[in-house]
Amino acid sequence: MVSKVSVEQAHSILQSSQQESEANPLCSLELPVVRHDWNRAEVEALFALPFNDLMYRAQQTHRLFFDPNRIQLSTLLSIKTGACPEDCKYCPQSGHYNTGLEKEKLMAVETVLERAKQAKANGATRFCMGAAWRSPTDKDLSHVIQMIRSIKALGMETCVTLGMLSPEQSRELAAAGLDYYNHNLDTSPEYYGDIITTRTFSDRMDTLANVQEAGINVCCGGILGMGESVRDRASMLRVLANLPEHPGSVPINLLVRVKGTPLGETEELDPLEFIRTIAVARILMPRAHVRLSAGRRQMDELHHTLCFMAGANSLFLGEKLLVTPLPDSDEDMALFDKLGMKREEKEVEPLYYDAAAG
Ligand code: SAM
Ligand code: DTB
Ligand code: SF4
Image (cartoon, rainbow, N blue to C red; front, side, top):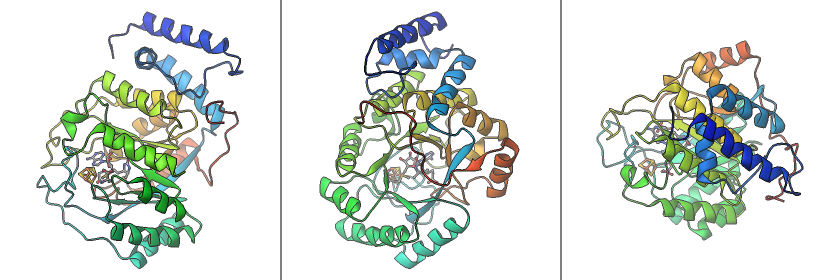
């Protein structure tokens, strides 16, 4: 059993929510597709479905909006590394723990541009930049804005993750043409205080609102394998799915257990629990790119394959995430070939109209 909901209860909860949605004249589709009103019981019921039923439902949803044989490839660069004032228990970049990481100041714009050019040559369509900040100063932000403008000029999409943002900072990034802002919830509101004490879950929600109000697409997900319960995973995904607009990308990270961090010795997560969570994310946020992010070095070919079958359709490719290594790109490419998967060239237009998004 994966949660307290029995298989029979799960089927019955989901059947009644489907009947309700069929009775809704706004929803002309057979399945309740893009929704923003998931209740706790429904999301927990998805987690409690038999594995094959969950995978089937995730695949049905995936095929409504995406070509299941396409994968979006992104590249990540740490533009400012280590010495972060926050105490996130999972993070090798927190200044609170000794992980042996070498700190680095904010990179020069030209260096970042060179790295973006290399990433483009390797097939990445999106270039993501991360900084170990609680929130950027205005001076930091103006440097990042120069980076964004020059990478956009290469014809690439840009994404940055810089910590908390004010409404004004969000508007400045929007004016620079930023495509995505990554700001993860990381875990459920209930478990948040066990993982981070230097900011709150609602600080996170405030930044997400600032970014969405500025008109920037949100990239927002979390980390699995930090000792959270199935209920926590359901709760985190429910918060994401009930945002006024679903995130365009949902990174699902598997904890990289880094020595020196408080979570460095955490027990390994059962891969099936990870795959279930991918499938539920796909069902709850049908139009989002669900991205395999941290932890891919711990996943073998079959683990990756089941993630793709569950609806994951994006990943980070390259040597490193921010500071920890990724699998060898040649191995990633060889797996795509074996599976007949091709890279997604550009964002696909959804096939169906989302009544809530308009
Ligand atoms: N400082 C900014 C912030 O926290 O929003 C941006 C950078 S932070 C490193 C970006 C994300 O990386 C975190 O929200 C977390 O989801 C992920 N991350 C960091 N360390 C990780 C680890 N050891 N395993 C998995 N994911 C991790
Ligand atoms: C996300 O959700 N995962 C990426 C990206 N967004 C910024 C970062 C993962 C970091 C993993 C540990 C590290 O290398 O620092
Ligand atoms: Fe800092 Fe971000 Fe790491 Fe937290 S996750 S310690 S905010 S870099």
